Length: 113
Length: 119
Image (cartoon, rainbow over the protein chains, first blue to last red):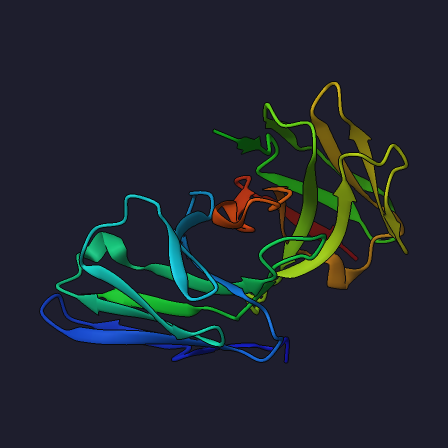
């Protein structure tokens, strides 16, 4: 257990469904991130939250909607997704500054059918 | 924008031998951090080693060591005495110092290198 927990581990959803991914960290960090990992592509940063405020939206389509109610929880709300959105979604947390690495969850494997 | 490039999609190594993974990056910053992460089939991204750009000494963690060439913007990872458990995807990553609050702590990753270990 790394201190960053993602649920669910696997998700299959239709293009008209609405679902949410959840991430929780128990490390006392103040920054949280969503990354997308697709086959044959580098990890893509989607969103950054520092001190619960969104500081980065890497041109992510509006069908992905993040929410950070507090420094320990991060959600990614999904609606009307496309098959090309199928990927591994990784959550990470860290301190905003200083020499600390990011800690990752085990990811949610999302399949859009 | 910072970019990280890993030119080797896959590397194979015999158990107990040594393998070196290459990584180059592009930045205009003088102070930053570099990391190597390991992602085994379990998908868990695990930090292997880190290097601060202001330190000239290469980082070492047990069987893992780096060759950091700041002028060349090169950051290679050497795995010595390879073990079966070393088989995984390895990602090189770059991060700014994060001193400015808005910049945060975001990591920019390379495309990854798959390491295969032959018994």
